[in-house]
Image (spheres, rainbow, N blue to C red):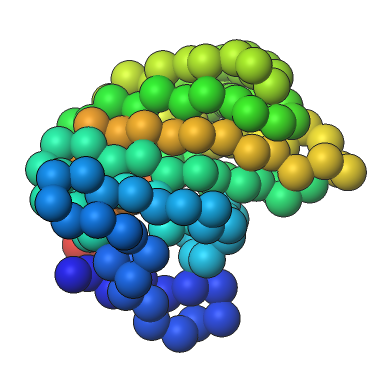
Length: 156
């Protein structure tokens, strides 16, 4: 299984957090164990710890005042259920449009849509359930340059 870095920089094996294997796989009561782009995550379920080929799901946390820097989801859909807190998405070309979601809201992000996510509170953490039509989780996400209005690929 794929290894990921946790918040302390140590490698972790996501399969260590999954029970089952006879057709049903479970992650139970796993809190924050790793981070990416200023978002903290639990182990979740994905192709890294299940036979999934087209879907992943994680519990995500954004700290008070936190920002997930502008990025694009390449060729996959994302649906989010906001469990706690409130976020502002700045999105579209140059991330010039804006929308706010709060606990209890569900929303969909189209593939290829540039967006940046802000926790609108300086005191409360955001908790969300994130489902992606990509079993690799965030490997198919690229940073987005808001000023030049274009994705930033590693080859550049």
